[in-house]
Image (tube, rainbow, N blue to C red; front, side, top):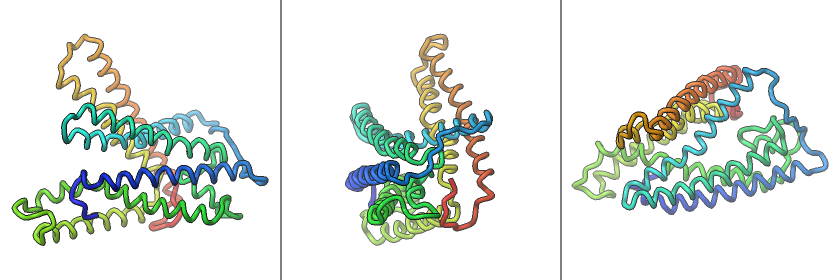
Length: 286
């Protein structure tokens, strides 16, 4: 938690990558084992009969996918901190999206095959049903939980680093060393308070898929699809009737609509799940 910069996180990033691969392989193997067992879980691949429900679920899914692929914005920003920006950015994004495809799509596809539309957003919950025996060996489930905990620590370090640096701009004194008492004391206090506040909110509000949808709709869709084309048109100023300018405007309009509808769908899902909500519940609401 006290690592001073993004660059100092490079070994944490490597460890996080290994943890992601290990968790993906373990969970995918467990789902396959459950799906081909002699007593497999009931599978239902049907969709909702309501057209409005299908529409809202589709846009909610788009928002969640935006959050998944929007993770690439961090290595993209980080890659631009030192030249050559373009080459490093491309390499970072290619690696990021390759990892995303493997670690998100493989367990998602296999989990849906094994459990149908009843699969939980956290597939470990599907492997550990409330009623009946676990659908995977205890050692495998225990190891998967340990990997999740370690991965959460790594993710918190990476994603919180930007907030740390913003907070420490005012509290740090460049005349003293990074690990001097003058800079270390406020760093420990601010970062500890930040992590404690995040942990408190996460524990109090057990909405996983719904929150991811809201973040994707109001955060990653504008960040990934709207702001880049707006900034391109402003910075390079192509002729207003040129195909590039018109294509950028079309992208901006379409994804603004997608973001708005996705936000409505995500908030709607939160409202529908509010009845299941209990403060500090150990049951994550999907």
